[in-house]
Image 1 (cartoon, rainbow, N blue to C red):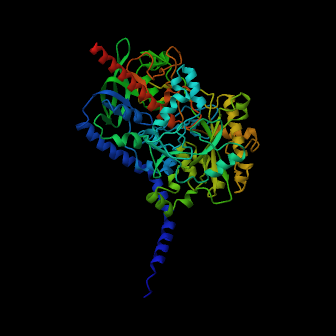
Image 2: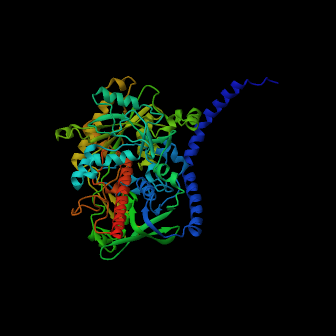
Image 3: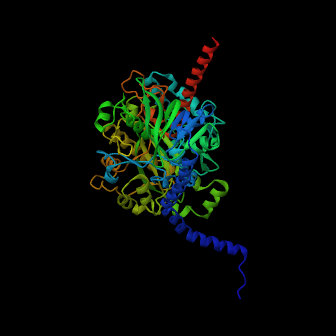
Length: 634
């Protein structure tokens, strides 16, 4: 009989076996994600259906908050400190997979937790997408889109907010006016720890993730071209930086984790899940809003608010509910069979960041994150035991804001018109399928484009049109909530936007191919021609334009359809206190109120709007109660 193997040899062979089988196990898990997500959703729904039948009988509250996402979670937290609040959320509990940052890319586009909206066919963009329709993900669960985004924690530029203040005539919305609300939700830890710009002790922990991959290459390349390494959440002109995340112990801190979970047992907060609000209820000549109608587990229900109804259903949900309630463009509502009550330009100022995923840039060194190679036992141990390693990153590790020659020629060199988001992930074996699923791109096109570079160390740079000129529109497809919502962002319908993106792409290629940082690792743009662009000269301006028009992807930064403005403005849906014009007791508090899209990602601005909006509401009712007290004393 052979002697037993020494313990260290047993361990070594066990790890060899584990490494051999791990890719198969992982891809099996990924292939079953849809089944897992559906099972989680169904179990949660079964439990909630029982609760709705026997326990959730209360129907009158001080405030009703519609939507428990990025803004709504903040609003519900703040208002329930003093008042009885009902939070109506269309989805259920956050999925446990959400906490793993590396799963961000893989959790999009599942009906269990994503609204999975689609635009109408685009005329001048989205050529590589099925039917030229852009897929818009939006979170449908407690915490909303903050559960499924890429954790990029950016505020925008000071000129974004100064522009809004000038437009609305209210300095509460300039950079200094919003800065205090950005700071109040933060518990910041990082290089740029300046009390003028960052907060401590807030609800959301903010820091650089434990794993930053190739991010430092990108930042150093920017420095080599003369751009500063700077705090992109403070005042800046242009600059590069590592990306800060809302993260703790390597795990995502969604608005659910930060604002709802810690107060779940608060007696003044009631949460009804799986509750889809279909309209707000109004009465009288002054259009006083006194409640909402909603569907929960197939049953139509009504809830009543003694003080206010607050729509925080997001940049798609809030305008849809308003229009179904008779608040919107009069002629359009009449056309689809909704009786108009308040004639407002709801849905008329739609803005979004359209982008091109530029790459892959292949490299000679094994320094990127290659899924098939780097998701291994070591990665799992690092994450589960210490919250570190590649699983603690969403793949986005660094970012930059730059001004194109066009912006500089217009005298706006200090207000960037391009954002870069650096993704240090190589093209792994099933990336074509995952891109097709998550970003609504045609799988056959991605397969053809990625084929030559699969398995190579590489990276991509997302080139985002930071200050688009395009203004789109949202319209009802019919008088029922179930009717299709018609979304037309009008991507790249004007020459300015496409020319700006072409310049942004060329500047990104120059950053990689003409810096010693990237050339030191042999970085080069792929030789593969993007399908559909074979008939133009490779790497010419015409090629880049074709590339962008084909490979046009939303960054899900939707704002504007419930735009804020002066009360007497024909473009205003809400005033600067976020009250819906022409109504009483109704506000919209989410990113849909921003009349101009900030140059950055919009999750953090949505959280700020939630914090600022809750501040407005509390001040309104404190002042009202103080006035009543003074009257009694008199």
